[in-house]
Length: 237
Image (cartoon, rainbow, N blue to C red; front, side, top):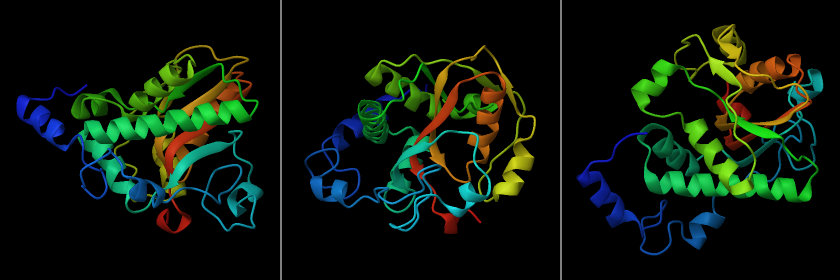
């Protein structure tokens, strides 16, 4: 985890009582900004792709059923939540981290309460050791750890990334799948387990699909996804 110097700590303290989005004094996120976030209300029931209100399953999932059971996400990856996620992902800003972790943990807890998931364990989408070294942390692991604590679901490291693939940003689904080929390895048994795979943003589901295939081939009973945000289709091509 990155070490914060005294100046960064002082700045975080100064900004602690300002809204992440509008900067006004008060709560970490004021009511108006909270309500105005791009909440994911109408989405594919399988992969959470933002779609029209009358649609249930997106065209992609109708053509080819994904290996994961379903996906839950909080927001469409658009302004202004995209900036806060980037602040957490690339700069580890504490206020952004606290807000995002709390909201994802609540989403998973609510899903468990109203559904029948009863996950046996959750696991983060892994990052390559070199990327963790350069960045200082894996944002998916930070999210998964907080969800694990809040929901009392065991956190396991069942998959590792064994090959450096560089950034996926700007790549379409086919290019992402090609880039990720043979880059993940199973690191522990998962047979018979209901698993929840945690990531910050799901763009094309290519990473989630590859990992889900691996887990299901290893005998997992089911794999579901949880993320902060899901990228709209017009932004994935």
